[in-house]
Amino acid sequence: MLEIRNLYCGYGGGDIIKNISLKAGRGEILCIAGPNGCGKTTLLKAVAHILGYRGSISVDSREVSSFSRKALARKIAVMSQGQEIYFPFTVADTVALGRYAHSEKYISSLSRKDRDMVEEALENLGLSGVRDRMINELSGGQLQRVFLARTLVQDPEIILLDEPTNHLDLKYQVELLRGLTAWARENNRTVIAVLHDLNLSRSFADTMALMRDGELAATGSPGAVLGRETLKAVYGMDVHSFMLDSLSAWQAETAARIGRDYRHA
Image 1: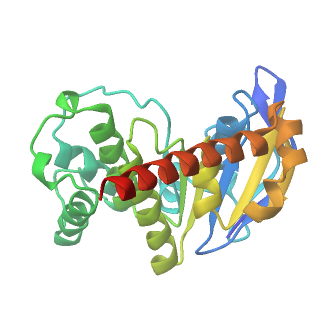
Image 2: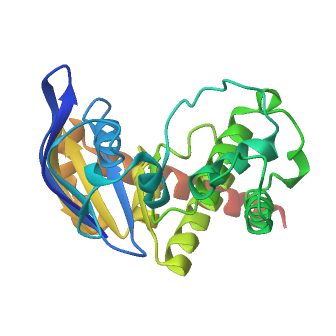
Image 3: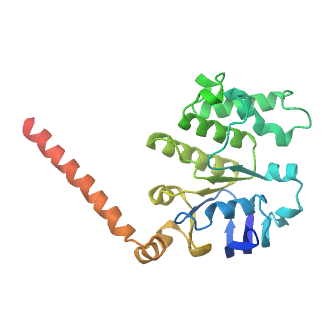
């Protein structure tokens, strides 16, 4: 579905992304990871054609730069970090904005299908109880789920997510990624997500791309990409040992608690 070939892009005439080539197929979850400032967000902006680029980015063999803005919105939806609240819409009205790409009329004229999709997204993301609240009254976690619901009702073929688990507690992080995985599999769509949490990437990605200084350091299955030496080279620390030490601490605490419970039984 999506193919990136020999991509270069950046800001002010300078390249941040340098010679990246990637593919993502239908029904696939591609997670992009790497240190702060390595170009992950810039890469997503190029795929969405928010930034100009050199090289090629194609969806179903058609260059993204050849689509009109509205036609591209039917193909690709973007959920970015730190989205601003410009107008205090209700939760339901904000989610309904995702249907704009499919409407020839003003967003107030929603079809029955549009309304059903909005209600389904609100229900699936646990937002039905706040559907009539103003979005400027919500917590950061609730607001993040509202923006995700808006992205889903856009009904794109590809979803680009930039740190979608920001502001969410662990329960909602896992539920969100499980929901996205089900959406991709059931609808034969593609999800490309920038995630800092390597454990979440390992758990949900079909394919990973690990970036460093605007280039690909590794790409492939999570098991192949998240090797000790690769992570050490990219992050400048022994990530593998740190995670194993953390796991050992959890296991030791669990064993000690079980021992205490057994003695007190």
